Image (cartoon, rainbow, N blue to C red; front, top):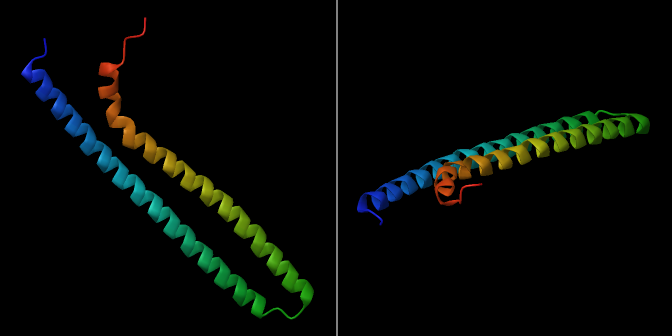
Length: 112
C-alpha cells in the first residue's frame, strides 16, 4: 500500500531533480555560448590579421603563401574548436540528466 509520505517524498525528490537538472542545463548552455563567442572573436581577429598581412604583400608568391598559411590555421582552429564545443554539448547532456539517475533506479527492475 502506498503511503502519503512516500508520495510526498517522491514529489520532493522529483522537484529537487528538476531543479538540479535546470541548473546544470543553464550552466552548460552558458559554457557553450561562451565557447562559440570565443571562437567567433578569435576567427574575426585571425581574419583581420590575414587581411592586414595580405594588404602588405608585394608579390603573388607571398600572397599565396599568406593565404595558404591562413587557410591551414583556420582549418586547424575550426577542427579544434568544433571538438571542444561537441565535448561541451556532451557534458551538458550528461550533467542535465544526471539528477534523474536516482529516480530511474528506483523504478528500474533489479537485475538478477
